Length: 336
View 1 (tube, rainbow, N blue to C red):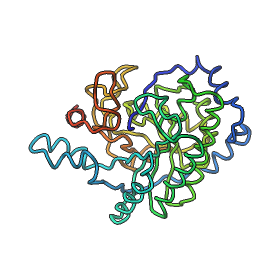
View 2: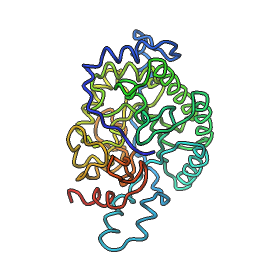
View 3: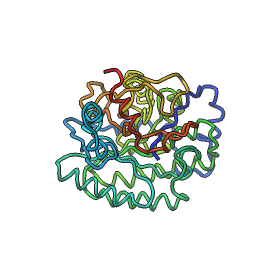
View 4: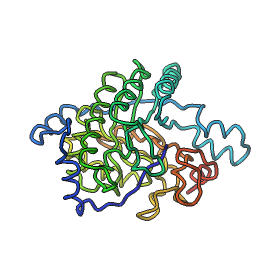
């Protein structure tokens, strides 16, 4: 389930489609008043977090694999296992897994990293297809996830791809888009009832939805005003500079909203405009940290766990989310 679609969409050419599928949806319970949204955005801008230490789990597939290796391979893979990466949650076991991870993190005096990934019609039926059966099932799922977090600290990225897919012509109907925005808003509200949980709504990447005003509009509909911010470059390869520039424009459109950047695999930047699925020659990026030195950038995070496949890619590669040792070693060794 851990994959990230890279679409170099020229959104300027899709504005009329986007307005029909997002801004003009019928039945959307989360429609925003454009005149009032900037005030709400400004009121919700959080303080820059400092001195945050994230939990490094010894239960990941990479951590289990490194104990079986020796020599140079073990040393290379340890560059991944030594860093905190997010646990992706979807399906019926989300509550138990969230509870287990946050209990471990709390016992270690650290903060858990999580991804909520169970939106209905997930990933437009592609490599990470699935998700909750319908809106009611998703609301129940979010409730279970929130219960699993309890009063423990966590940073959570909410539903990679979900917002951007309503704008890229992948087949999300206007009514489905309206429901999705309402579900995301609901998720933000439920998760933010837990004061130690920071929530970042996924906003795509620098090569996907390129119109910041259009993207800001649907993010407002999706509850970003009540969230701690938004996330960019999840499971993608755009450099930190590219991602920062893209996110800064989006932040401005959102009244100064903060953001996080997935730096897990962006050390060498992207490979062309269309190579999003397990591209060769990529490298690890900046280590997870809240000490970014960039205004508005709350953290660099490893949202995508390095070494987990993006999917079959039409080449028979491991399924999405499956750990793939050769790819992991390639990421760890590239550029070194």
